[in-house]
Figure 1: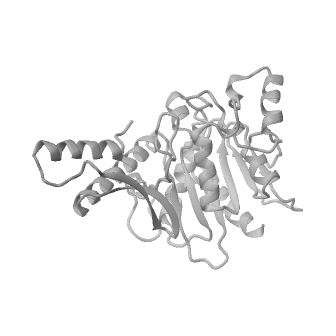
Figure 2: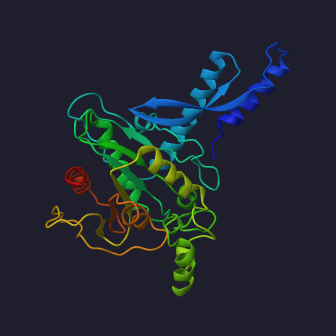
Figure 3: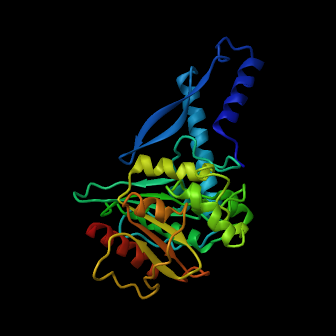
Length: 319
């Protein structure tokens, strides 16, 4: 795992002491500061009680670490970067340099759970939150979210405001497991109203499948807690959760007489469970959720990915 900003801070303290500098840094503290970027407030760590140039260097180093983590994670997935209609080509490093981090958003193993904001000045824009790799073994989801990031990074003024969490379960991704490092299925750990009464009962009824263990209690996992922070901070009008391999579009939201046609994946309701994101957001809070279940192999071209992203942009405007 990459060094944290706190580790760099400790190194600087030792450096100062070794050269007998007069600056008193032993009482240094880490505080939270709100920073506005892309029209959305996110919480980052900032070192205080140090010279301004040193604080700047430490914060720059922390941002570089976050960007490198992003590159390391997303480079394992196929990308579809193509020449933009206007402006210079953006590489994965360019995209990852804009990674952001909410305070206390990390995995069980303390891997940062970074995100991206894409703002707009469109008058009727809605807020779309995309969550990918909530299950670490659903690798094609990484290709989907990577292309959407590539595409959004080339748009100067999208129709809607987007927030994208590319890897919600990095520990599972590293181990290629559905569950997180605690063996908990994050998509069964959201604190739905029926969790205490139903979650473990249903899990036991389903022969205690370890891949779907909901945890000892609701909202017990740091990844779940991070997702809830984003839901509170961003307040989305629409949530997209990218999965594999069931090859359907499962929409939990208001009924429409006709849904947008998408020939790559059919629209089909799969139901929902205690602790699932769909039940937590739509059935309890009336925020629509689209669970985009792709095949167990990512598309060879970006055509279907681009079309689905456009369908989502149209659908959210109808709600």
